[in-house]
Length: 83
Image (cartoon, rainbow, N blue to C red; front, side, top):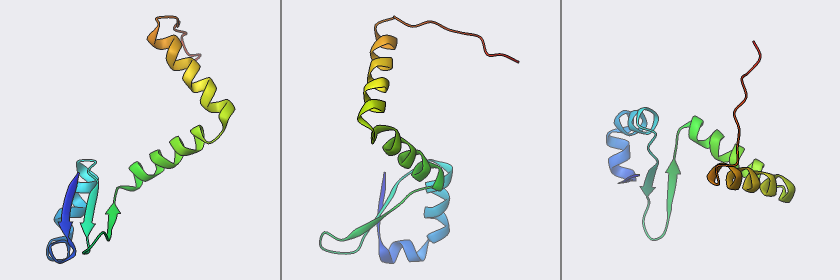
């Protein structure tokens, strides 16, 4: 995670944006007392939204938790995909 001030961000926007995109960094830009913004890549944002959606349903969350438990307990199997 990167942090910077708004002034430093303005001076070197390209560097910060490139770092966020190329290194999957999250950038926090401080704007003073308890105020700031977060900059992240579109790919990371979409991933967070997808995860939030998957966990928003109690039934879906329970299914995911069950699948994780099976994997961790060695209670899983592998299937080949159809061509």
